[in-house]
Length: 155
Image (cartoon, rainbow, N blue to C red; front, side):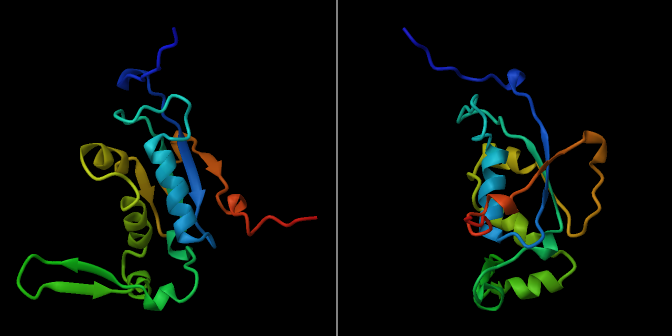
C-alpha cells in the first residue's frame, strides 16, 4: 500500500534565489515568485507546512506593466475612518520613495492570507536597485524573463 509523503518543518531545506525584475512583466514575475515562496516547485510540497524558499528580487523599480496599467490601474485602501477611501496608481507608487511596493503587494495578493501566508512572505526580500545585502547566502540566479513564452523565438 502506498502512503502520501508529508514533510515535517524540521525536514525542509531552504534555498536562496535571486531574481532580476528588469523588463519582466509584473504578473508573470509575481506568479513565479509566489510559487517558489509557497514551495510548490518542490516534490516534497506539503500544503500545511511552510516549505518555500527565500527569494531576493532586485531592480523592482524597472518591472514592466503591460497595456495602460501604469496610468489606468487603481490601487485602493481604506483608512478605517468614514470617507477614508484612498486611491493611487502604479505610476505614483513608482515615483514615491518605495517603488518596490508594487512588486511586494502583487506577490502578497497571490500568497494565501493567514498565518502560513504571512510566514511565507517573510522570506521575500525586494530591493529597488541592484544592490542587496544577501550575497553571503550565495543565492542561485533565476531567469524569469526567459520563461516568458513571448520571449522565446521559434526558428
